[in-house]
Length: 286
Ligand SMILES: [Fe+2]
Ligand SMILES: [Fe+2]
Ligand SMILES: [Fe+2]
Image (cartoon, rainbow, N blue to C red; front, side, top):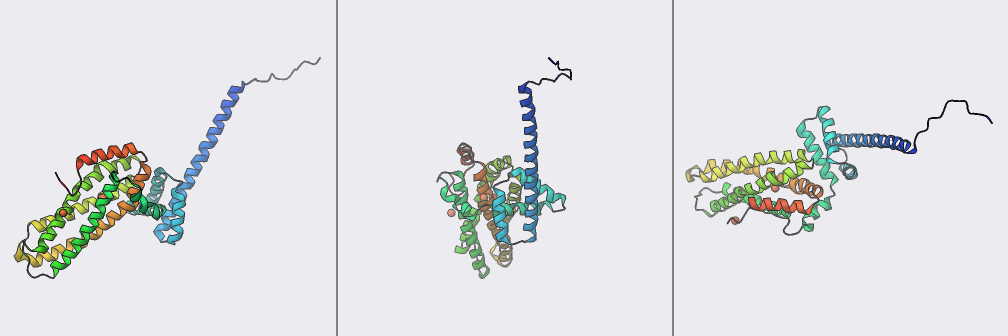
């Protein structure tokens, strides 16, 4: 009988071997995840640069749709950071990522959003107010054109009263903006969409100033200053109308489709609605 004379084998319990294998596997998966995150961020950075260069929109839209389903807000933030490090301005980066999201969201999907919402859903009301605002903006443009041709206008003229009515509705928009800034945007920020909220918020600052200018102009009207009034009205309308139309479009087609996508919890929307009900809605005031 031969006795074993070599070094004694170290007996490792099976459980420890399994733990060791699991750690190695975990490490491998973590590295894989990191690589794929890096790849996704780099792909997105490249795509944003191509959007900036004005590549074929059809191709860009296809790639954006494909990429949007694989990434999260964190990946977008990393790609935005890459562009800033490459010398892009923060404003341009914001616009590029907004354009990317717009391209990625299938058009029909964002257009059907309103139809799929319950009538008492808070977003349905917000979007209905947008529709109403578009009508008032169109009226504002029309009344500005009508007043531009007038040589006589008093504060009892039908045109002046119509203008006052439109301005009152635009002023009531403050409640709409307060609801967005105090309720909806904070929820979106919490889900990582701070950059998109930032640009909507900065639009609000300019829109508020323009509506205030319009209010002041109407409230201080003197019939003998008609010429000056017409010039000021025209310059405010030329700025306010396209800026607000663009803002409403950004909210309807980018921000709110994202909000409905990321806040996928009916209870949260109900909670938001309760706070919004407290703030109030444009139109009827009790
Ligand atoms: Fe009214
Ligand atoms: Fe807004
Ligand atoms: Fe809005």
